[in-house]
Length: 135
Image: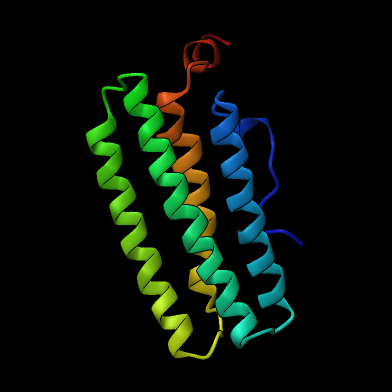
């Protein structure tokens, strides 16, 4: 069972960002599903590392997009990204130190991150936000 499914509430109105969010969600779901079966070791560490790479690339792309549309909240968004990456890195270090064992706290972090960040923070740069607020 996935940690979270993609739905319209996650649509930020920017196709490239949606595609990257879907890729992040797919990796999160893979980690969640494999952790649920008790998988550990190098394969789990590889998934966590892949999620880290994709997330770093996404944050870079997202910040470039925000700069291209002169998004007023770019500076604070960058700080939020840095904080998320630090927390992610701390979790990843723990997972590596425990030979790929994924603690429940990491899975909770992933779900809260995705929900709060995309549905809350990322929606602020959405070109469709005024329409969503009116609807």
